[in-house]
Image (tube, rainbow, N blue to C red):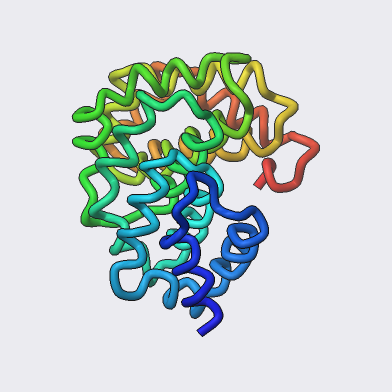
Length: 227
């Protein structure tokens, strides 16, 4: 009942900004699967999404990102994928964009046409701009790479990343961010996903420097990267 009341207090709030203590409480509560289920019951997910987009509220979108981590709830987010993708290229608030990307990165669903989403919302030029070394804050870069890893599970997306030179952008970023273990790990994951597909494997091996970098990283001081 407390979870319901806290969630409804956010939805029914008439002010532009939600009370910080309230949103912080809900963000923490949403990490629990049962609490998350209660938070989206009825029309609450729709109401939370509406409010987050209306006010471009990064903290509220962070709450929604936590909710999207729960596999049992992810299908409910499919209706909002278009809105989440569209906002990336038109919003100036990087903190808000980071949380939108985080939701998209969580949604590894067979029902989603990742290639169509990227092309319909013209995300490839935007992604390549984000991946330019030193262009944006690291959180935005990191969540963009995580999203690429989710998309690259789809073979058509992996092909698109090769043809549109997203892979080249990732290699250039890898050169510039060799000391950032988290970014390096996520780039490695994207490469692994692309190499899984027969249609893109030859391109990765013959047309890019990725094999040389992957071999070099096998000797990295970070055990997670060596794996």
